[in-house]
Length: 244
Picture: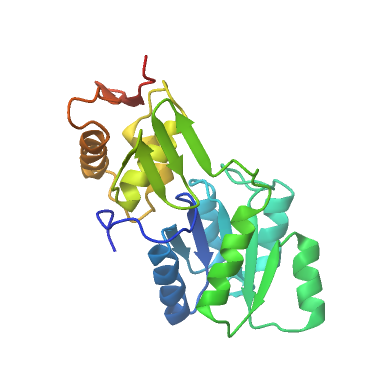
């Protein structure tokens, strides 16, 4: 799946997830299911790989297996909850534990260590996705899904965006880029910052994917003589202009 596919469904705003699991077949099934739902999804197969990614990339939710080749997920969960891991992720990161350990003691320990939810293997991918959506909705205010800036309206829950009465037909990446820019109107956002928040780690930082996505988004926002809303700040990035 690539960034040119159309937005489908109502899975909420573009978010970045990390799956930590060593069963390759399960990892691939989970990853593809999450990507299809519109989430940018990275994968790690052990604690070391998870820590490496968590120290670099900001995530909205962590799907964490307990039994991993170099340790168990309890320690990583504990470190995150007690802010003992360097990087952009801390105690506020939502954690869904995935494990074959069905015992009450393990579930209790997982929740006590700070997991937000606990899903026992084998599980249905549809249930996993429902739990992900539920966790990402937590603490969201009643209007947090809708962004408004002058004539622009973006409804993250419905994955719809409008300029005035005109509905914008956007790909997932265009939608994610617009949402990120709308949360920071007037600020110059670098291509690197957009890549970090809208794409997953498989995106090549040396390609022109951000430039192309912003370019098509700019054209879709401004048609039929409408004033342009996105400007390029040479050498620095992009800025969403507030209409005057």
